[in-house]
Length: 413
Image (tube, rainbow, N blue to C red; front, side):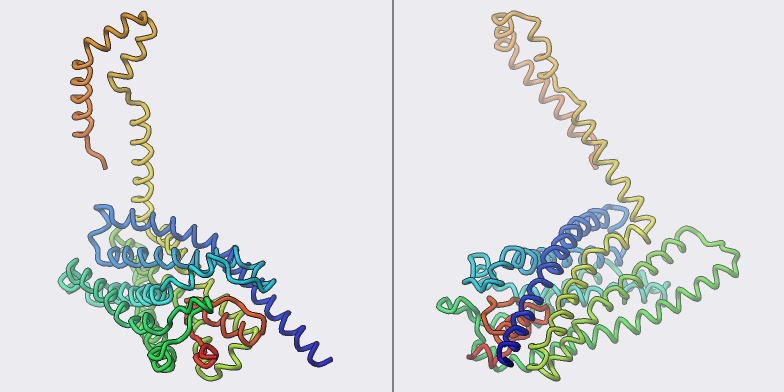
């Protein structure tokens, strides 16, 4: 009886985890990701406009939006589509399907971790940029130049790539087993890279840094508000815009920290009790929610920019109006050939052919002149396939989290 009840509990736990991931990663994650991709694309188009791209803050936000897009583009096939297509197969314990095998063979884990690390440190960079602007306003123009900003962004991407080099060497795909196993090098670096180095670099240092910066910025906002009340609300437009941008970045930082907090708890839990955490339903539930929080954070920066950034809204509206006005002008314009073709039905078939033959050179010449005039006008880390037993399944489910921790002992089995 005890064995049967234990098996029923294991089956229930497996079905619960798979169903929860289907809902959270499959449906909710897909909707958020599609919205986030379009939102980040719009953010980039607005921020690179001539009136917006000159400030260092907008350059950091542009780079952050690019990383967000890459993150969501990897999340959709690796999590959403994978569970939407494979849920029924996982429940019935079917062999791995073609899409699952393709994901297993692709080096998505190191790319995924590289992008995630770049998002973390770009968030630190943009918060530091705003701190310098409010603490040293006179020296900010000399410090936060476009050259210095581009060098900082490039350095963050290079650091993220170098840090994630061990992830490229950690696993090797086994065609016979249709899964990835730890390599000898991967087994040696697994403990140190995944636990002792990963948690400080990805969580502790960013969390402490962002917390200190955020406290300083919030103190500045409170002092600014009191000063505004003492001056009877008299502030020029530039100061109001800076105040709103600072408030937006504070919101972005708070949302980022809250989205990363569940995964910090997961990593600490796994470092203390690897076996107990991998077999816990609470662990996998918290993991699914934590991943969704990160997707939500990377998908909603566009809304924060629209809500807090008055100049961002005005630029976006002007951009939309420009697109529709150009489309309307294009649809209303008629070339000389089109005007001539409208008159052709009034003529006979023989005469129309004569007109086209004899005057083709003249028509082409006028058409080229017309096109030249118009051109002169200004234009604006992944789970393996679930298996039968809950012990194997729990270890495999664990590998699909953002932390991408794999139990080396289980893989070697």
